[in-house]
Image (cartoon, rainbow over all chains, first blue to last red; front, side, top):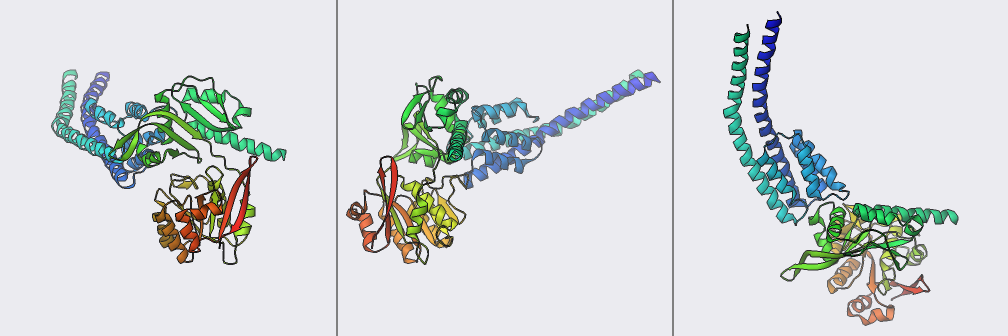
Length: 170
Length: 309
């Protein structure tokens, strides 16, 4: 009975690891999609109304959703009360602490954007936001390809590993 | 009286505390190390690169014990003041100052970066002056009674040399007319081109200009006056510093529509006013009926109402 229970647990662990790996791929696609939606919202608001940065970030929070919305809202709070911390640093800190499921290149793109936001005239920032969103879109497409290719592989590997465990241990 | 003095002191300390929020930590610490007695007399904070923060106390500059101000400090103050939104203050920077929450004014000095003939920004900052907004109630209550007519208010020019308190009196008159002092409340349209009268911050007036006042800022006076005239159906139109002929033309057009006018003009008095072409034309056409002439005598501001027609 104990042996059966142990085998079942190990099998479940293998399946869980596979599904979780596939889920991370899915999560990255979703986070990137929401970040892009937020940046596009900022771009529109900035281009039209030239709203101040805390308002732009708040709108990005409303226009995105999920983990990206939390990130944008936290940045909005930091921008409205900098307390001696330059916004670029506040943005980097929030990016570091956010639970966004991003790769290093994704984070680098966002980090670079933090160096432009609020520092230049509206036209330069709109351009940087458009470029940032376009490059994140490329990352999202690549992430979606990975998810389609590797998502099934990870799930299948998890299931196969789980089945193998069951066979070996029973 | 003692109660009034305490309230005034508390108001001034609140203004210092609010304005100091834009200062980097070390400079703010140095400022508050001065103590409440001195801070209650603070009128202005001055940050000059390479020197400690200075506080202007009723005309005398008092040095704080903080570290020398760096360009990074000056940039940080500007970033804090604009809430990391340089694009929202670039136009104000061209006027030489940025309005902060609370109506405080951050004056900027440094090396101008240009594109063609236009100033774009300041390449380097060398000094900042943070003027604390602490508008004191003046003698506008007496003046407004002398300007009231059965129909509303007489079109009036506030006349004084620079620094005599024209803008403060204009703001007070706008508020009092809007609140119905000396007669029924009037709808006032305020064309606040440089944001000195109402000091809008994120769309909210930082100075009380009355509940029946509509403020348009960031727009050239002549254009703003006509926008207000067409869109807001004002009974009174107010603007600070009528200096250009197009401002005068807009005023004349508004007067032709039956709107009363309130404006300020740089001049030593009404005789001086008549010597200046822009005002002479307005006076000859009867656009303004009265003038409030401001004078300073022994540190006291005196206002005298004169008939112009």
